[in-house]
Length: 189
Image (cartoon, rainbow, N blue to C red; front, side):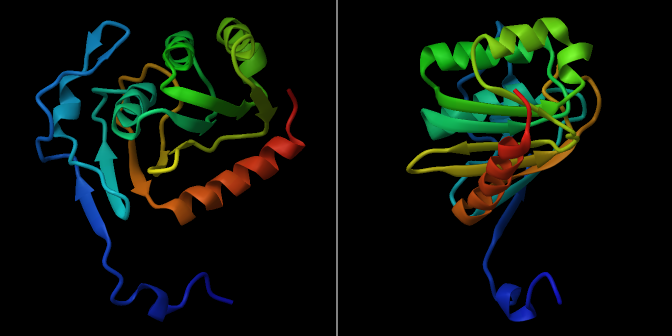
């Protein structure tokens, strides 16, 4: 049994981009930090895919802040191995401002003991599900947008080079949302 049929992908028009084209002159701020590098992010559109490399210049929670600027208020699902305090505070800020209307976070079981302060902060504000997890997936969705971010970075302030892609496709997002629903069903709280 194969994963896909050749006829499913032959002739399919997909827009694949990389971080190189200027989009906006307006700077984005996350916790007082000006994020000029998102000026180089190409305009996203449903049906497009954007591959990225961070070169240690930005982190996943900063990308989320930018994508919420694009999407407007949205639901967010996050799979990550771990989180630190600043990303958790950014998520709380986004909830308070209404840019995140609902959030679900799945982390590895070790998050509770290895990062107790961020764990307590997070669980006081939004649902956190614990399981054996090493995946890094983020879903941002509303009536207009369905974005799936798959990458190598956790929800931490990260100075390392990380890679990933942003897929703007409702079927892809629904696939991962169904997967997250299943993980949550079997996870601890």
